[in-house]
Each structure stands twice: as structure tokens, then as C-alpha cells.
Image (cartoon, rainbow over all chains, first blue to last red; front, side):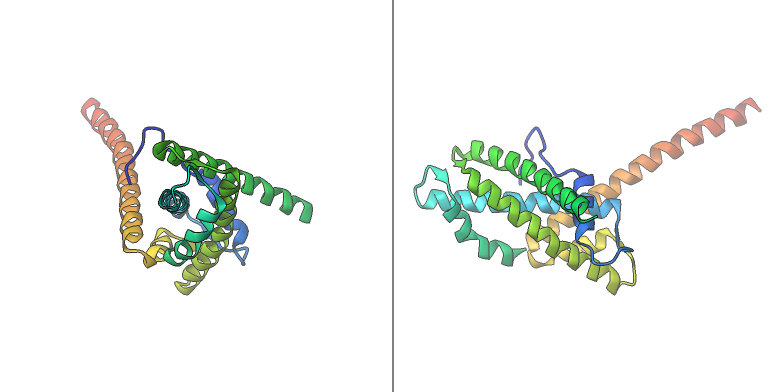
Length: 81
Length: 122
């Protein structure tokens, strides 16, 4: 995964609030390191989703990436994560 | 109370959607193939829902280790299904640990030089 100049990423605080909102127990907290790593993981997830959809569109000779392309790659994406 | 929760949820969804949009735009530019707005929204929604799965897993891992704080080790476990992903997260984790060690060295280094200054003066 090549690093581009301006690194687009999920903010640590957003990730923290996001994951915390889904915890079942109030006492469960997310460490700072875990939040940073999860931000990376989510970025990879989105990039994979986008790249695979893009490749699917390419294989179908389409100029734009459409919802059908995403739908086709979604099952494998979820299995891979 | 539930209105606040809804608002927070909407704001979080919007934040996710924003970053997803930017990532899709960059990948679209790299490959000269635009992402339709529908796809961006679908990826954002999927990512949001996947966070629920991730969060529940992380919570379960932490609880299994008899901790209430989710740690980096729990995240590494989460990445176990794909070797490449696992290695990537492992490397990031080591990068973070190294950064923290470097920061610590900087602050203890400053303290040490201050101490030796005071010693030489005394």
C-alpha cells in the first residue's frame, strides 16, 4: 500500500466515539493505541472496498464505478475481514 | 435522551461518509474512474455497520482477557483473518510503540541534561 502525499485518514476521536457507541457494556473503554490502530484498519477496509469495486468496474469495461460493482465484491470483502 | 443518541449517530455517520468520500475520490483519480454517489454512500454505510461487528469483537476479546480496556493486542487479533492485514496492523503497532519510546527518550533526555547541568553547577 503506497503512501500518498496527503494522508487521508479517520480521526482518532471519531473512531473512538464510533466504536464506543457500539460497546454493549458501559465499562468497556478503548485505549489510545487501539483507537489509532482501528483508524488504520478502517482506512484499509474502505480502500479495499473502493479498490475492489474499481477493479470490478474495470473488468466490466465501465467508465464509472456503480453500485452493482460494489455489490459484487461485497460478500468476499466481508469474508476477508 | 434518545434524540441525543440519534444525533450523535448521525454525526458519526456523516464523519465516516466524509472520509470515505475523500478516499474514494483519491482512488478514483488514481484510476481515472469516478465513484458514483450511490457507491460512496454504500461503502460508508457498510463501513459504519462493520464498526458494530468490530466493536463487539473487540469488547469480547478484552473481556476474555479479563480487561475492561480494549488494547492494541485486541485489534491485532481482530486482523487475524488476512495474513497481509495482520502483518500490516502488526507493523503499525510497532511503529506506534517506537514513536512513544522516542517521545519518552526526548523528555527523559531533557531531564537528564538538566540534572547534569545542576550537578556541575553544585
